[in-house]
Image (cartoon, rainbow, N blue to C red; front, side):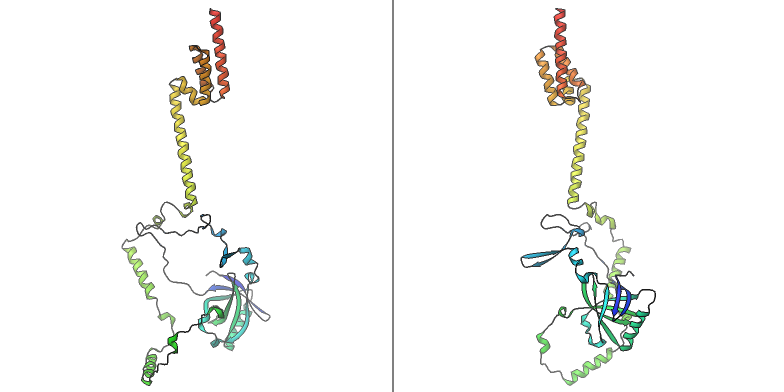
Length: 344
């Protein structure tokens, strides 16, 4: 067992260090919901109604709604309350055990003695047993102030939470005020029936037949192979990749597809350039603006030699700026003109 609370029982000047453990556990089979068509898990998400985003517990606060207004309380607000940090079970009364109506009892906790010596624990246990009384106490658990009863079961002190007086509902059923008369024979028959079922209470004799049959049903389905692989019920998308996370994955896929497309375009352009066409080479390596600049320069020169020179310049300066391509074309054009004048 794991302790859910630790502190001390205090009455007068006596302090009894203890740890609290839940006294009961559920034996019910736990179920989760699945889609009847494919067996996939059904998940519930905490989404904000304002922004629509999925919210983690660490970003969730508590709020109280009072008509048209809502008050938000944070963890810091709760911790500021004096009882939130109280680690004492304070005895306020010792009352006759039969004065506490069982309807007021809630969950039970076993109290384990702590410290070097359990003497104070044993003293309190002995006092409750000798006086046949129950200690009414107050304590704080999970940020709530609670009322409780401290009693003895075998050799262990048991803390039993109790409802506050205003939490127990008052009822008034009209049929309970009926004036119907009950005859003497009916009373005798009822008393005889009670005697027939009279016995000492032995909890071990009782069994939750529904859960027993449910276990048998589950085991039978497992033996007959009527089961699914648990991992398969979660599908391909985990809880962390739902909602806005799924949008991130879609974006990554889109970026990857764009990158692959870009790489494919470069490979295709490289193939065309190797065939030696000046126009393709200039457009691919130098860009559209640089190709246009080279074309204008070659047009002004008006010669075949100028066109070849411009194409070579565009090929060599693929990763450079368009201005360098234009300057190179002009120099080639001037050199060609000088050669023609010398030849003439």
